[in-house]
Length: 179
Image (cartoon, rainbow, N blue to C red; front, side, top):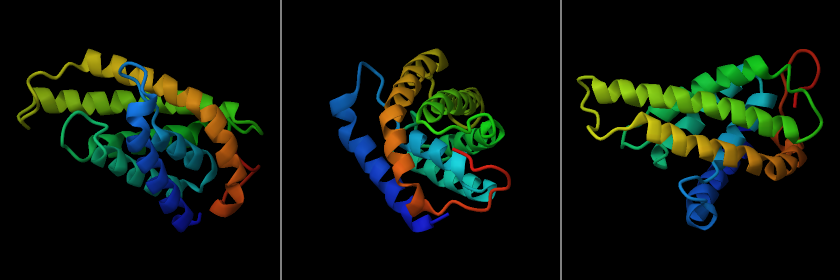
């Protein structure tokens, strides 16, 4: 995998996601371009590269304020778990259209959301000094809508990402070419 291309796309996704958030939010929901990029990488890169890429993207999500606290780590751990799930689902999503990417963004996004909500809930009820006004149901509902929105945005963005595949130099897979 070309890590320079990954870095450029990650920074661009972060900048577009945070910069355009006020323009394209619908109620509490706004799409996560970082999640779409993470799933795209998870469907095509070698497994070790997937885990590193998911960790980096999760740290970017934490740094951009995706989690409702200043804590660095919940989104990173959620993305690592989501990367594992995407690697398990990858043989199912071998297709030549952006639709499988959108479906996988929905599945992986919900899984990442559940992991992050669980980590933040454990932090809120433990001795680690969580926020007393933490409402996991509100967090899950608002972010579930964002995951659905991200899956919808993944359709056109997936087409563009597929066109950029030669730049990424994904290799090292055994078996048929994935997504």
